[in-house]
Length: 307
Ligand SMILES: [Zn+2]
Image (cartoon, rainbow, N blue to C red; front, side, top):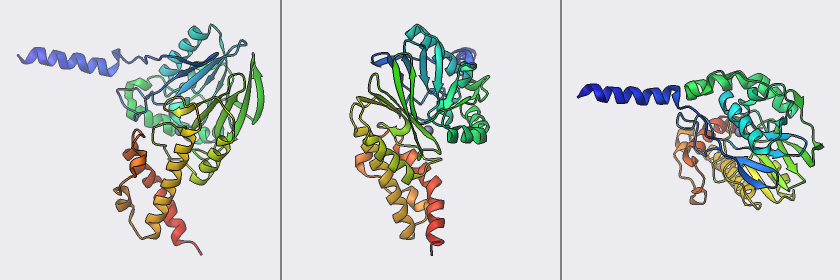
């Protein structure tokens, strides 16, 4: 009786270990010439292969533009196939919105095509890409097979740039990371915000400057758009996702400031309750605790060393 069970277990293990590790990417059309490849709003896991961030692409008539490339070489290959099949156009340009690994480790599949990122993003990638990649190998194992960081090749600079029939306006912000690129496609009114905006998914803060992030969101809320593509979560039609991200960040900063100034320890702060108005955010408790661990020591240091 034990042998068949063992065989089943071996078969399951083989499936998990490699034979079925294919990203089943789907493109959803969200505007004329424009598609979203939506990632899961969960954490990195063996079940999702690290497919947790949104990518998007535009068929410009003068070639396809790709915004973010996913977490691994294999994802990048699947994305490129999907883009070219969906648009019937070759990829002529790639943008990386920021330096986090779920957004750019698929770049390898676009080698030879100009890959644009803000200068601050390129600097951060040069410093951290290897560590990010090592970390994803630890979390995702064979999903990462063959992945080597392939860094952007061109500086993205604020201002307008036309590709085919699409006039793209680039904005340089910071706050989620040292360089956060936002792209407004004037042809369709679609605003691609990268991780400055999370929609019903708790924001991540490992490289965040919360004050700069909040002022970036202020800038975005004054930008007219028809729809917004966040870094994580569904497309949003109005400013709600911007306001909700700003609300969470303001609350988080206040929570940590209050905890430090009232003498709470980091351990205590980790387990304080979170207001119910954030219940719609996926991964809320985990991200809150990660944020406390990232941010508390700096706030505490500033508090005790203030004049
Ligand atoms: Zn990010």
